[in-house]
Length: 588
Image (cartoon, rainbow, N blue to C red):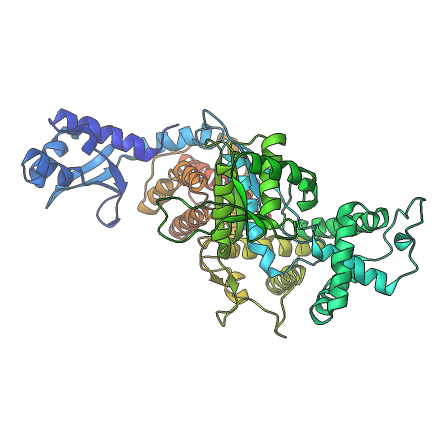
């Protein structure tokens, strides 16, 4: 289904051509002066030089051709040469009816759907999720959902940090505390216990302890490096411990991500591609791309057009050890072999821009990915406290993500129970839904690359540009629709009517922008565009609601027309919050 701006522009193009001008000048935009008109066209200004004519003369010629248009109710040429346009109510109503009848409200599906991997999350096993993990999870989940809604096949991969020195550190500390464990008996040939001899809480204490010791004690660090080597060399006991560490960590990660309504299709980690690294390195050498530099193996990735220094991409350190670069390149190789995607999107802290520039260039230069496969990196900003510094607990430490979620849920529970009485189970469920809207909308409404201030009081407010305000609007619509049905009305029988007031028409106009908004958010990988749209839509609805006595209207057909408009508004708002990753309760 064509976007409304395209249909308006088509009407303008025909008018420009009929008036003797280039049809390409007939491009419409949303008016930047809504007090004067709804849409505008500046084509006459652009054509003045080409036709050696005053812009106002061109505008008047075109306006003359648009008299009696099926699209416009009013067209006026305004000095120095603007065309101010107002849409016919009948045209607007017909367009919304077509949207309502379309499977996805007029959003066109791609002729060639893409297969896309979204790499987001990136937690390390044996470590708890903290607030720094929230942005990647929330933004990545939304991008995955937006792309899927737009008709693409999307695979979300958590990409775990489950290999390397951190594992050696944990195993070393476990051995220091429990040298009698069978895992450390090199002569043991039997089966290892099925259950881990430690809990996830113990693991979360063990890693920072081991990390701290390694920084102060050279012998301890040497043991950790030796245990890392044993793990990576396949020593049975070390591998068995590592499997325990992975299993209980992943179970805990899944539980905590589920509290954010975030899920992944793949739970792969760095360990899954280790066997690919030797062959990949040989291929890079034989292809003439990788060479030794100061003992390390590197690939030059600089280009003639570079305006800044781009260092070589290191593949192996001087001691032959792999790096994050190596693992990420092997992961790209693995995805090409196992999934063969059309594109990959990575979400990380924006400070990693140079790193991903090096990795992507290396992947292309060494032939890991063909030129047709898109590699996108989206760097996100920092979530800061009110002091403008990275968000901390009141004690100054890094807050665990589950604690932030709990604090937000508790705050929403307090707010909803002090205003009304709800059954305990419903109150708890509703508080969680609203809390997720506060957290996710508070994050997603900012452009991903920008830092933002986390403000609990503002994010949980039911007023202003917040998730709870959006949900409150949806619940208000649901309440009206429920009362209409209680009065004997049938929602499916309600038919959209032409607007009879300015606020009603304004609401209808915002609804028509849905397909263009979602398409733009998909193409630009920009969830904040959907947030901006639903805030506009919620505001437009609330203006209409406050000016209109919907259920008290005595004209049955007029009331039914308004109800049909509310149904469409509800459905589009709920579709939008679903792709953002949260949902609305039935009442608040």
